[in-house]
Length: 209
Image (cartoon, rainbow, N blue to C red):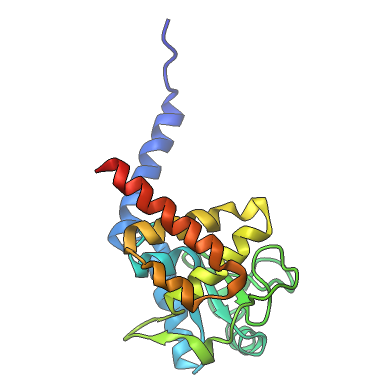
């Protein structure tokens, strides 16, 4: 006898599908939380840059997520917290760098400029000050794509549990058509891994054709 999916599991499947569809249409709570937090930071003149999945989506690699990741300085984070904790945002736990949009239930994780990606151990690549490098648009600030790639490579190379960051670079190369020459713009410590990823994507494309 063929096993059947339980009604609960089937309902969870359709709910997940609906949530993913809403995300890619930009009508989900994560997009609204992103709009809210970036407007607040802009209104407060606090430099920031979107990173992780929301940044990947802005650059053309569509990946769903359940939270918002933002690069910011420690001083800017404390300024934000002093103004907004208890006014729509709560800490994930006392002293946490992460907060939660109390209305939408969406987490906002702050990454601090000067820290090291991945395992957090010292390495040639570290998170930059967004005031120095962020690219501004009408409503959002992003890291230059070379900087984003550099950080993800450094993170992925530091620990097996950050392998998803290496996969993100592969998908950026594939979906955004990043050039091999981008290697010249990133730190030498991660340059060979970028070239390896780029060549792997070209090889895969040639096989598919």
